[in-house]
Amino acid sequence: MVDLIDPFLTFYGHHPDHNRADGRRETEALVTRQGLIEDWIEGFESAEAVLDCLEEQGIGATEFVQLVESNVQHVIDGGTAYVQNESGLLVPELMRCHGS
Image 1 (tube, rainbow, N blue to C red):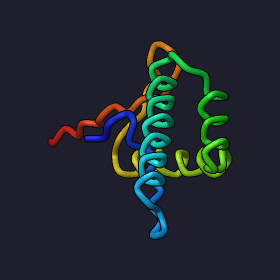
Image 2: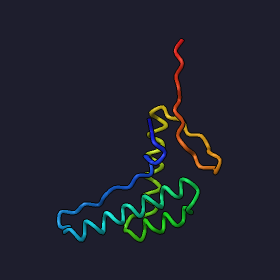
Image 3: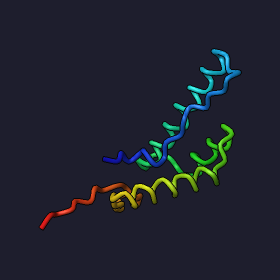
Image 4: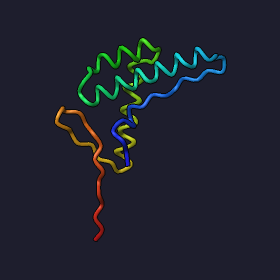
């Protein structure tokens, strides 16, 4: 089953030269951006705020949108339908195949 947040996930940006302080900052950045993304999905934040945050953290907004689009298409191709929720956002709905 696909969780609503799955296509929007960002990941920890580990670098071999990171020290503990760098690791803490990256963890805080990950928590911040994922929190904003979750708030946007739930209708509490704007897409602009999410994209601004990504850009501020060195993640290209255009690349992120393209990646999300690709992720959603992959989920759909895998048999998960997306339906619009009450706030207009597309959310996954499992397609059930009925045998004959």
